[in-house]
Image 1 (spheres, one colour):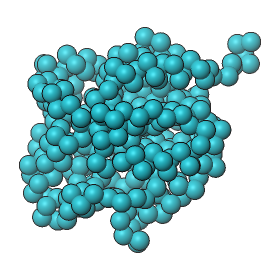
Image 2 (cartoon, rainbow, N blue to C red; image 1 turned 180 degrees about the vertical axis):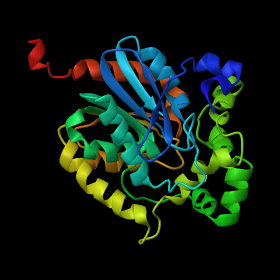
Image 3 (spheres, rainbow, N blue to C red; image 1 turned 30 degrees about the vertical axis):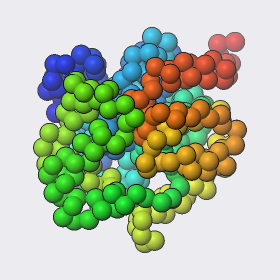
Length: 304
């Protein structure tokens, strides 16, 4: 799927054709590269895509360079049917994109699975990271809701998640605080790239990559990250923005984050749910702008 394949009203909300990177994994990764200036790297989760960040891109790309990838399997990127879709694979893809674009002094914004992917890439390239903005996500193991555990099972996953697009449709109902926001083109925008059984493969693979079992291959990746994040980013300016009505990443997750990165400042939205940026982007944008202004990047000696 390409930008031109999106419904006209969705393209009006997401007016960027973007660019493509052919990755060493053999698949095409679509990403936005909008604006000039300091780099803001926005990393989405599951079952969303770069569309999730559109309002922040619109509000910030007149002063900042917004890089917004679609993970392989998501959005307008390739959706291979036999790829592994492990967390480490997504991390490797993001590191490759950061290196290829030579992104420096990056402010990374992460949400949902984008937290694990983004922080994994940040741990691999800490010298590229200057600031962190963290929305409802985790880099540590915690309780997983029963509905998500059930979705990992073979029949439920294949029939509900891939057959009926149940995970994305559930997101439109459960992941927001104001369901009225999801009517019309906004709701169609979230669903548009996932219009067939094959195009929903990543939804299920992300769910099955949650390392609930001790021997799960992604458990090692998460445990390594839980250890490395506070070691590498204890002094990095960090902003936490949390939707308190999230049924997955509850406020308990934020409390644990604040122990990992105690230098971070937190802003909670009692009326927002898991897709907090969709719920509260009008209030989030000034918070991000203020945070960036209060934590200026060090000047390049070459410019002194």
